[in-house]
View 1 (cartoon, rainbow, N blue to C red):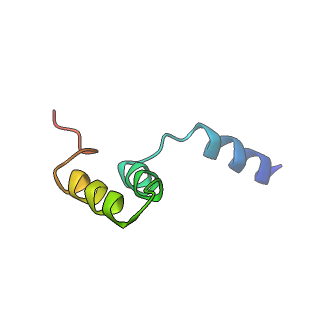
View 2: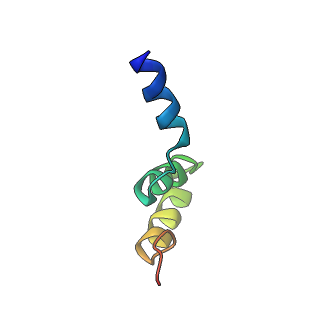
View 3: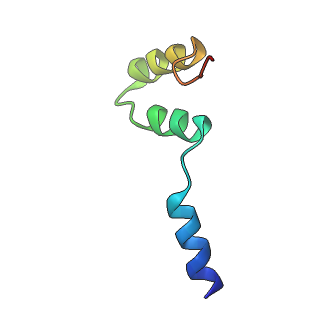
Length: 50
């Protein structure tokens, strides 16, 4: 029962900015694309400014 509850809460959790960054980097198709994506992240692609 506890395992089901943990799975349910994990499914409702929103991904953090670090999770989104890792997923974005994992989508790179080659080294050049990876470096381009890293530069975009360094420039603040996933940061929220209020």
